[in-house]
Image 1 (cartoon, protein in one colour):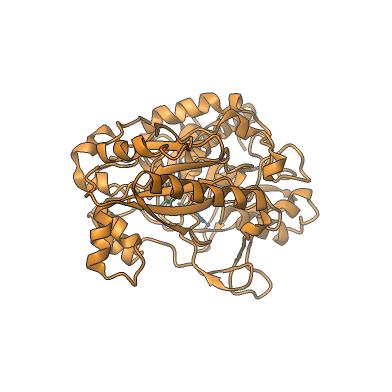
Image 2 (spheres, rainbow, N blue to C red; image 1 turned 90 degrees about the horizontal axis):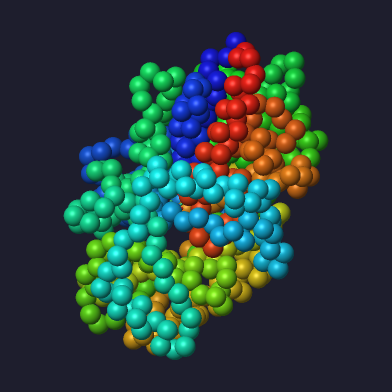
Length: 481
Ligand SMILES: Cc1cc2nc3c(=O)[nH]c(=O)nc-3n(C[C@H](O)[C@H](O)[C@H](O)COP(=O)(O)OP(=O)(O)OC[C@H]3O[C@@H](n4cnc5c(N)ncnc54)[C@H](O)[C@@H]3O)c2cc1C
């Protein structure tokens, strides 16, 4: 007998959106989240706690492809990484649902049109809006193409409430911080916050799912989960939404425990890991910068079709923290006050050897094997992106400094349980069901076949809403267990 209709594992972008939509469809949902609800005492806006101490980040140690220890920047709390995200909520372009062999990009099994109504719904629920470009950035942009470059600026769709402009502390601390006054639309606020009392929803926090439970008479059917504390729960359907670093490890362990390693999808679990090629750039000039929100504009360039640039939503104090440690702190603050920060991202293609592997056979840690050199076209374009923007900034009268984001910067991790029609080349099908298993789907960023040139969250929210729609119809057709 099932305790509930659906168990959702993880409450980030995918988990919260899928839970919300299933409840709307009249199903009973138990959402199990490893982390706790974040405090609302202001500590999530405190630079010392958040940036210097990293007090809210995961401490889990992994090993990279060469066996060196790394601690990826993951967050375990209600709302997942969306509590900390920069709230840039962009749709993928239509062409980004197609394969792009020259850039090593896989195709989606669905097209833009299949996701379009769910993009619309996600944007409405998240209150996506655009803000005016502020004076310092407008001045910089007006001079950016002086050297003949072709940067195109457009307003950036943001999940921020308009009232944030009247709250200087939150406006300067939303990118990498968690809102206290609910001025940022994150997964908890925009989706879980809409689920009313007594609607068949149960939330369990502070409890990690350790294993999936197979049906004793048919190992190809998943019937529930076991938590790290030993509790077990049953459901008609289980949805993995633990994030692209974690869902593949749960599935890998399950397939190995149940001896289902001959399923074609097993060979693909954890592969095709992507996280964008990322660089942070500071543009320094003599004048003090007083823009408040900063993150208002998206820059693209037709010569760099897999790349985009966003300003960082960082004020002078925060930018000062990006200045290398060997610079005295007073000087770093002086530079910070006169700098604009930018975030440069290039779509990384897929490579089967870029992968997440769960710790097994006595290994002390899971492995994150990712080498950008396996993605030559992406690496070449990213270098051109950094060079082009640096030259344009120099031409505009700004001194650029750049720093590549290292592997532990896993903010945009995705692609490890890739969606596709062929079980031999993918893990989930076009509706998110795991190929070859009954009762198991994936709703988080793991399914993304492409990372695209923009940030992933809006596409994850849309995918999860679509998955829930299809699953609800299927479960409603079946008699409850
Ligand atoms: C600093 C920062 C800035 C970002 N800025 C942007 C941005 O501006 N725009 C954008 O689109 N994206 C941004 N991102 C990325 C975005 O936050 C992620 O792409 C998105 O949150 C991924 O959603 P998800 O559902 O795949 O995973 P997550 O949001 O990571 O959620 C996974 C959840 O599962 C839980 N979990 C893990 N293991 C278990 C387990 N065993 N049992 C139970 N629960 C488990 C985790 O605690 C977590 O709550 C940013 C991320 C960061 C960190």
